[in-house]
Amino acid sequence: MTATPPIKHDKFIKHMSAVSEPLIPVFYLHQLYQQLCDWQLPAQQWLQQNKLTLADLQQANSQLTLSQYSELIDSAITLSQRPDIGLYVGKKISVIAHGMLGLAMLNSASLNDALLLLKQFIHTRNPLIEIDISAHHQKLHINFDLSQPLPQGHQAFIDAITVTFLTLFLHLLTDKSVIKTVHLKVTKPDYYEQYSLFMPCELLFSQPQNSIVLSQTTAHQRLPSSDPAAAFQAKQFCQQQLDAQQPIGFISQVQQLILKHQGKISQQDIAQLLHVSPRTLHRQLLKHHTSYQQLLTNVQQHLAQHYLRESNMSIKQIAFELGYVDVANFRRAFKRWYQITPQDFRKKPPLRRV
Image (cartoon, rainbow, N blue to C red; front, top):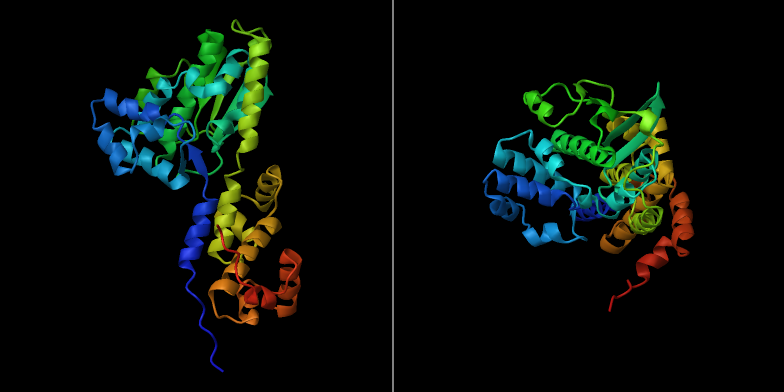
């Protein structure tokens, strides 16, 4: 008996990858557009090349995939021939541009409260940004990075975050002396002299992490713009926004790697491909209330349905494709997932959408 050839599932994998790829709100991209305009560059052409309109950047609910977002930044760098563009964009991002998060921080009782809000709700503005706050020797360290690197334009994005945060802190405090140092992981770039135009303090390159160091002495002092009632209302709105979002970052990367290898990849191998330890990978997934096994099962479920509906592969072949050595184990797993056997699922006509 001739074995049924495996189906071509590239289209399906591409679809699943698109579903799991992070979606990034377009907040702050309007400032990138404006900077190109300020430099008298064809910003409208830049949008058209990326199949966008100015209206897309002005819509509060507009989102781009990680790839689109990255390509947009990279094409702006190419157009302007200015790898330092992130510094200028960061300067354009005012407190108001942060939406309800900016309003909540502005009305916070203290710098410490404002920083905690920034850490808690930064994902409502850009879910790629990760923030950690620690205190050492009377100094506050606001550490920041991306949950996953941008394929293109990564440092420009980090530059924009750095200047954006500096601008925000200066607006809250009005005292430049509170900001002590800025640490950046990047090796000193060719445009390093440009940083001095935007930094009110010492800047150090090739550091273990990206960080803005503040004096802790002012952390609990009352902010001039403090308004508890306004801060409470803004925080509630931020929480609603956060609850409406889906977790991204590591989850998307792990899903895509599992999908690419059709479930035949270990947690250790994924950690190695993501350049993190298995423990860090586990902790990141746990942070979003999931695990490697849960994501693996999810991908197996989708692939199992796909193979049963779209191919002539035998149940045994499908089980093998999904990494099951014993077909009986696959049958049991499938029935546990869908309360029906693989054979009966294949016979059952798919639900029609109306």
